[in-house]
Image 1 (cartoon, rainbow, N blue to C red):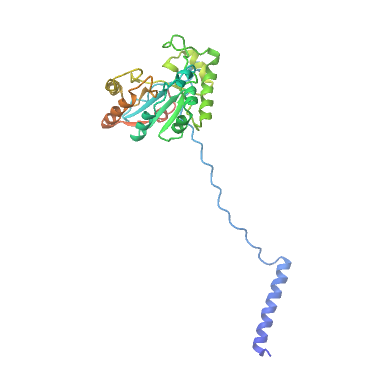
Image 2 (cartoon, rainbow, N blue to C red):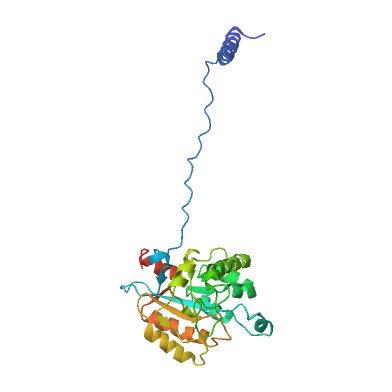
Length: 285
């Protein structure tokens, strides 16, 4: 038998429970609050590589070096040359690559820009992909065929005027096929040869033409010390140095780089990619 006090308490609890159920059924009970959602995070801005403003009369802009400021920066650039008609020579054993040079740059932690032909990327897709995915480097366009964009350019075959833009775009397609994710919108004319018509032809590809102000002289050189001396004598703040990443045509480049890098660092220079130099211009020619 339940004592009177305990019986009263039980009745009170039962009454409260019934009242709560009635109120809930009438909709007067407090509705559950929805879970608070975290604020949406803004999408990260897509970073675009720096380029120069278009040149006159619809021409592609041309970049040769950064402003001569007190910032002692220098860009080492390497042309990975292979023309469209050299496949037979590659099949016979001629080496148009230079993995030892790339390894030396990595060992010295030297950022660099590699101007690659599409034909080179087809011949060496694994190397193209590893260079293109290494944050130390950036891949830029050196045409697909390495044929000249003007007449009388070091004996190179010539690209027809109406095929110039397609040659540039075909190189980008070859880079994508090799697995290069983000080739830069920079283009180096084969042999460095261009005219106003060539600049107008490649403008539609959305590129900035990149030349240089320091010629290394490594093409077909046999004296690494002479190449190093020529580079060291020419470098100024903001310089772009042109060299080559092709063993058969530039066999001493790796040895020259091993001398150039420590000496420029001793002089207070910092190695950068072309994109950083172009970025320093603020888009102005």
